View 1 (cartoon, rainbow, N blue to C red):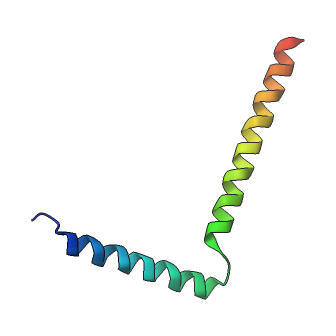
View 2 (view 1 turned 60 degrees about the vertical axis):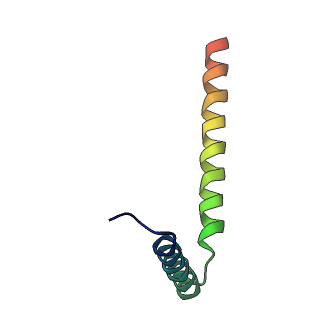
Amino acid sequence: MPLTETDVVVMLSICLIGFLAMDAITRGSPIRRVRQRWAERRMRRATERWLRDRQGEQ
């Protein structure tokens, strides 16, 4: 049974409503937390790479 455009729109809107409801319940912005987590991971990776480069020079 192939998905019609309407099916996709309905599913996406249900997901969006659920996401917004969770956001309202938790009162924290999940997007901000995810961005912060990504930034921390990027910083950690960059630091590890920098440390490896420094150890390679010695």
